[in-house]
Length: 97
Image 1 (cartoon, rainbow, N blue to C red):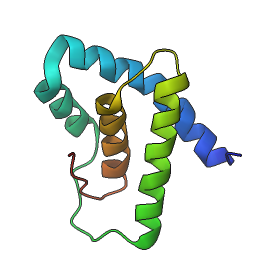
Image 2 (spheres, one colour; image 1 turned 180 degrees about the vertical axis):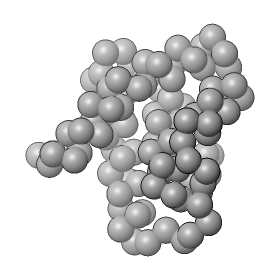
Image 3 (cartoon, rainbow, N blue to C red; image 1 turned 90 degrees about the vertical axis):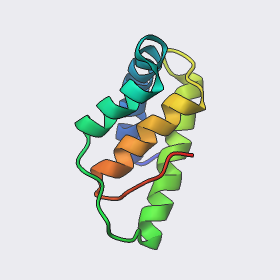
Image 4 (cartoon, one colour; image 1 turned 60 degrees about the vertical axis):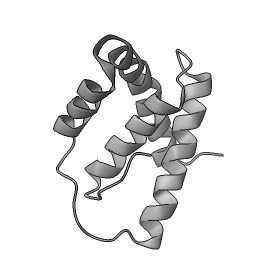
């Protein structure tokens, strides 16, 4: 079962993943990533806590659910970009791999 915060993130991912997928197809990876970085705060330099790491894993799981069951199927790249943006908004400096 998902708590309220997790449900809210799932809704965000369901809404954002089709936009990221479309942007990747029409604008490419570099321009899409640049847009994501402009929309999110500058990445911080603090070290992630154990709670931050668990939260990032939870976000990745929610993005995966949204990618499989959302409005449109989204592969791992749009999912990764969505989680990347969410983590950056928390003041951390994630790395896309």
